[in-house]
Image (cartoon, rainbow, N blue to C red; front, side, top):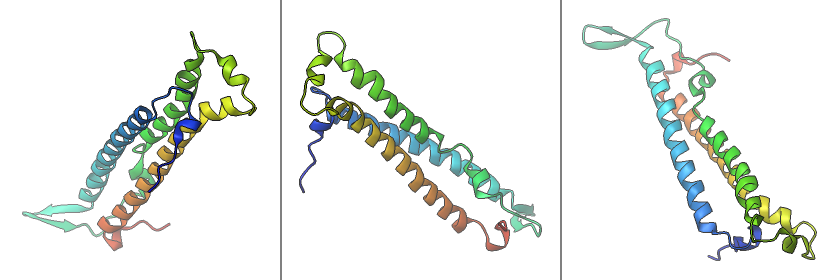
Length: 158
């Protein structure tokens, strides 16, 4: 499988593997935090459906599971923070590349008019899109877990 050459989408001298590593670590941390927050919320809501009678758990007759959006809460917010941080990286990291001895005028003299913008914002935009896509996929997994765990008679009616 041929790898895509991302060096033409980054400022000269950018270490693309380092940026990918930072994004991967951030996404892994956001995933762990989201799973932890949602898992605790789902467990607590599930335990609330039952009463203890003797040593057994018995489903309450009036039990109703909390709606999915309430359980989801702010568990995916770290993905949104990752997307925002990825976009801020374009401003603070990529555009700051040209500070000091590295002249921005070199990039402005290139024949393609939008070369500077393309090189500064492509990788951060890709990182932000990956963060949002990961949040969406994790939300679908959480929704599947919600329907698998919740007893049918306890599902809220929409």
